[in-house]
Amino acid sequence: MMNIEKQSFGTTPEGKEVLKYTLSNNQGMEVDIISYGAIITAIRVPDSRNEPGDVVLGFDTLEEYLGDHPYFGAMVGRVCNRVGKSRFELEGRIFHITANEGANQLHGGKNGFDKQVWTTYSHKTPDQISLMLGYESADGEEGYPGSLLVEVEYSLNDKNELGISCRAKTDKPTHVNLTNHSYFNLNSCEGNILGHEMMIAAGSITELDGESIPTGKILLVDSTAYDFRLSTEIGERIDQVEPGYDINYVLDMKQRELT
Image 1 (tube, helix red, strand yellow):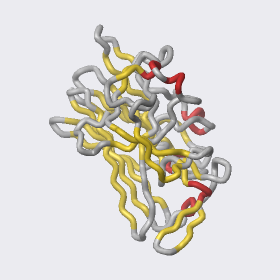
Image 2 (cartoon, helix red, strand yellow):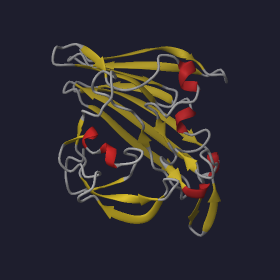
Image 3 (cartoon, rainbow, N blue to C red):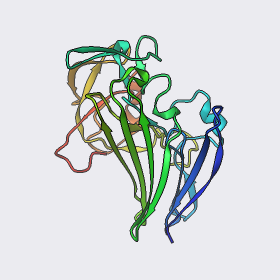
Image 4 (cartoon, helix red, strand yellow):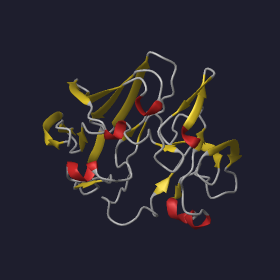
């Protein structure tokens, strides 16, 4: 039957316990999530031979997550991606936020949501199991205005569907743009992903400057290496893009299946 298990995953240098939850269904799929950063540490999915394989990159210990890493599996915020010059204007005011990538802010700053211990509670219905994680970001944290209450729900059902739902509530006008930063490799993280096929329902991308900040200009993907509107191997045209795919797609919202 569908189940959720809890165990200790270690303690932060500040003395906060980090919990690890394992969600499992009747098909043999399992998802590991820790309360530090609301991080997905593993997704084990049975293959065609019914052998489980972990399809996301991650670590085995809390100590590794406390060190430098490229946001493996984390919930990032308040604002994912980059904020140019670590400043923005909102309702006539200029806000200066913490810089952590040169002059810019990346993924919420030096102590973003990926570096916080979230509260947790689980929920189970006949159709799915869910883990809810919450974090309250104080007014002024990393330079952002307003208190922000964030809740992320990870849910697993017997169709082997992993759902991620995000909600946020604030007491002041602010910016919030959350994402999960998992890295997938469907070969059980063995070898590269150049042979993986990908489809993205997007006819446009954002133009970027030399620091990967959007210029505000929208570019069409027609006749470019960025066109994934039809399922295409990632490695088929990657040599045409330097240093590889690291771009923002503008999704065609009228299409139901976006990826």
